[in-house]
Image (tube, rainbow, N blue to C red; front, side):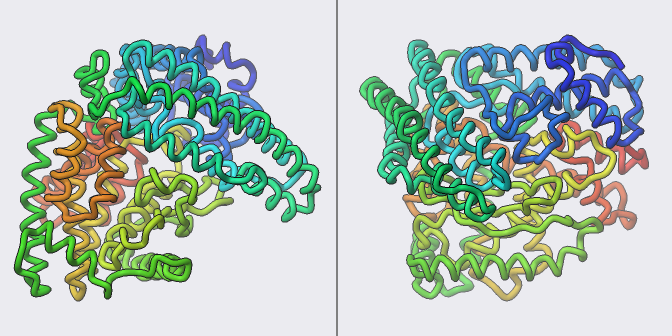
Length: 610
């Protein structure tokens, strides 16, 4: 086994992880040099992100040592180190010649090299976050910063079964305060370079930070979550509650206040300019961001025009459906808006109404699960449950999103829905959301990747490609339509068409904001006209695009590529085409960049087995 420089830096933990991987991975990963690089990357990422290691419930050896009491390092020095790692990984992978590898290794090499190249593209700009994850220009916003995810992470994923687990919780609360302090330093450094979020983004982040601080310390999830879990495990909850209260009072709340004070100061210097075009090397930054999220070389203008074409197509479908419901007067947007306000489609915005909504979602998932064998040969073993977005982040959080199951089976997948206002979810909109977030969308795709045999851990459990994953979820919405799930539900199919128009409009709006200098108001107005969705919902979405440049492009770019691949395969294979086999080819190799997916499907059509 060849040890790289990073293996040596990681010490014996990396060697232990390598032994673990050799013991469980498919022996068809035959190239020792590639295996050494992949194993090193795997352990480096897990050691660097203890929260992710917890989420994946990995053995300590795989993560380079103990991790349950640690949090990731949010300092500028750590970010620089991540960028250096990625540059080194690229060099190591480029030394390996693909023609020397067996088919499985060749895919692994292509996937990881593509991933690292896209991840590295934003690093030279010198601000925000890049590393091996998505490029985000702003350290702090309504969607970025440790305050957004750490409280819920502890409550939903940190297990407390022993005193050691409880002490690890306290250690992570302490580390959380440290993360927030490092973020303050980095935001100041970025602001000195002219990198300041739009004023409306700062307002949204300030609202969320202040909202958390209004909660009595003992009632914050950082304290109450530990007390609850300690009681359930028969631990000394009073002493643990007191310790957590002390940490939150003396360290966490002051860290929140420091972030609030900094953002209040930056608010006086910020503008309403919404796109990254205003930032240093803004055009190059946006190209790096769209490349990362779409895993294509498409230009912003190509993405923009694709979106406009699709918006027109789905607008026609909505018009047709509305006419079937007898709604003929007014624009598509006006009629969809009226449909969304029809009382017969609304849940009460009460606890009882929200519970009924969740119950209906669970029934939709159960009904669909019975139909999956019609188009899938391989089904997920992991279950999926519906959960509410935590109240303390729902103001700025997306409408729905998915959290993957623990690979060891200890935690099911979770489909989160934002219930800040049930009026945002008329009944006809929910089936499509379910098909997207649960099955046959994110839950099926991610669970099958995690459960796949013979793939390196990095590919099956860790890597994520927006165009592949989100593209699959949009494809899943169309597949539900093709299965006839809307045949007797005209309003439900309108929900599907509106959802598709919404994702198509994202292509237009994201590129409009970041490449064509659209204002936030222009973006909101365009999406309202394209979808007829509620203004509040659209505003939240557009604000999301402002801080996650390129991410909104991944959905429809990915779906259109999947449809193209399926159409091409049908044409080439004719009567031999099998939809179940096609789905296996797309899903079982795990997440893939679109350029690699093209190769995998082409090889399948030509009878080449990976």
